[in-house]
Length: 195
Image 1 (spheres, rainbow, N blue to C red):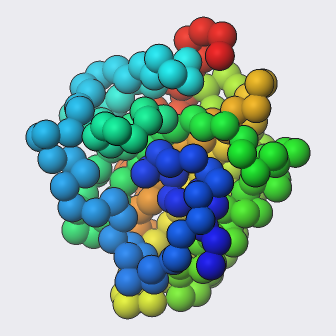
Image 2 (cartoon, rainbow, N blue to C red; image 1 turned 120 degrees about the horizontal axis):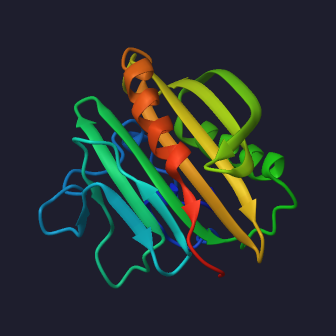
Image 3 (cartoon, one colour; image 1 turned 135 degrees about the vertical axis):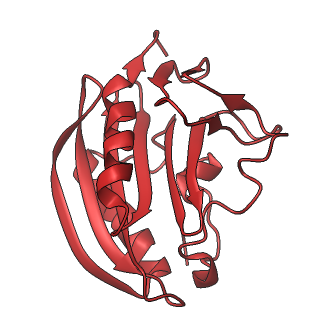
C-alpha cells in the first residue's frame, strides 16, 4: 500500500512509499522519539529550512528527528501510554495537491489503511497561525485496541509549493485538554521569511 505522507512526523518527503504496518496504529511515535539524545526545543521552535516558527506551550518539550534526515519540523510527546502526540512540519507539495481538500482526502485514506474503523470525520476551514487552511478531525479505532482515538490535521498549502501542517494524535478521553495545548501552538505558527 502506498503511504505517501509516511506519517509526517518522520519528516520524510511526501512521495515516499511504504508498507503500512497496522500493528503500529496508536503506537506512533515509537519510543525514543523524545530521547535526550534527540535535538530538543523548549519555548520556541524555528525552522531555517522551511521558514516557519512555533511557540511551544509551557511545560512541553519539542523534539526533531536525528541527522541525516532533513529538518522539516518537530514533535511533542504528551504521553507515551496511551500515545498522545502533536507535530508541525513543512515539506514540498510532491503529490501536487491542488488544494487542501485533496490533501486531506489522501490523509484520510492513509488513516483508513492503518485504522480498524473510522468512526467519524469532520472537515472545516481553519487557520494555521494567520495562514488560511483546512482542518480534518477523524475519530477511529486501531486493530489491536478498543480505545477511541482522534486525529486532527490542520493543513495549508503555502506559496512556492509548500505543504504546512499541524497534526494532533490523541484519545477521546484526553481530547479536550490535548486539543487546547495543540491549538495554543497552532495559533502561534508563523512564517519567518521567504522560502
